[in-house]
Length: 166
Image (tube, rainbow, N blue to C red; front, side, top):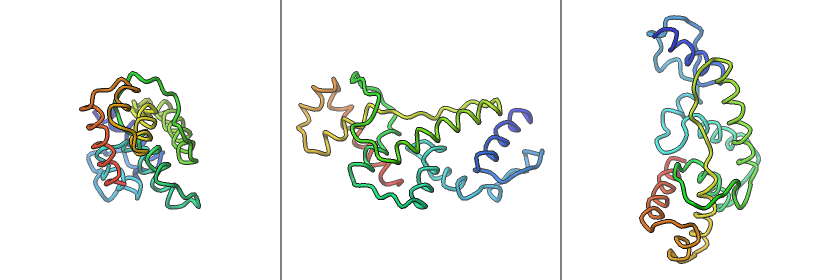
């Protein structure tokens, strides 16, 4: 158990979520969380590693994003599949490039520490939500992306939750 916890604690320390150099992992508590670590504890709908990174990057960046760009970026955190094969978002603000680079970095660091990371980005929903935000009729969206109306509704609700967390 200690070896298992040690790998994850070392990984989270390395990527800036924990400030802990000890070896007694039962002593870990909230005081060892960094600002990034505290932000991660508040993520419920999105990715707890990538969303704090994005939030901190946005707060320190001079980049400003339109509502459509924010929607496209946050849609990458919606874990759902549609038959529509999308490998990239219809628009690509700098934030998406940041997330792609950060995901690669987090996965590389996880390999170094021998831990498993389930972070990923889902590009399929960006186009779906872009069409919805542009006012496309539900029937057109569900037909274009081979979705059921209930799945579209669930996707919109997930986006609402992501926006509330943001």
